[in-house]
Length: 305
Image 1 (cartoon, rainbow, N blue to C red):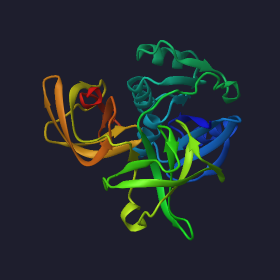
Image 2 (tube, one colour):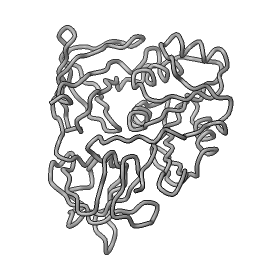
Image 3 (spheres, helix red, strand yellow):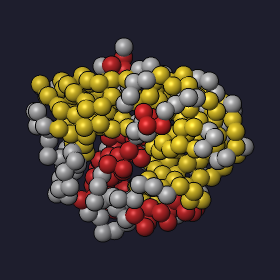
């Protein structure tokens, strides 16, 4: 069965990130997040994500990083506050991390941040994804594009974060309506079933495009509109302020939300529903480069229900 690995290239330089991705795969999808593809074998597809608006905006960077299974950090002198922000993001997410370049200075920065198992490489050509395929089931599909196709109907592009079969039924977010998968394509090839990590095109049976055009996730029934749990306020950030609105990120999806903090506990009321995740990142929408915009991590009690 076809499955995939999702990797994100992180760098303070968009051009450097694109250069790394270009040595790994072939650019096939230009959007806010560029996507490069490479078939690792007959049943394993690698998708490499490059956010194109960092450091001016942090939204697509966090979306790409939180969606991915593997993070690739391009380290380059002179290091600045954006490198610190990227290192904090990688450490907070806790995913498999590869570091390209940067020498002893990069090793010290990551060691000081608490990294103990990052893989340091000299060149992008040294990257290997062997053993990085994830046998996981997060219970949803991430959707980044919805459009109508004549003779087919509504089509959604995204990533399977769970097993998907033709005729499976999902709850669409934010509409909270049930939809049925009519057919599945991967790189213009039809499939009856795909597994975790695969970049997919999903034709929706009888779906009204005008109702579904803003869909960003398909869940197998579980989603949250309020999140309660333990909060960790991260170093080098401006901290959390009660009653203020932040961006809440999880698995590629995000929603604005108002946060209330009491001691080590926090509650966030979301403006739109999100798939259930074990942890969510709290991100400041501010463009203030003096402090990290990654301000907190919320460990959700909903994931244990």
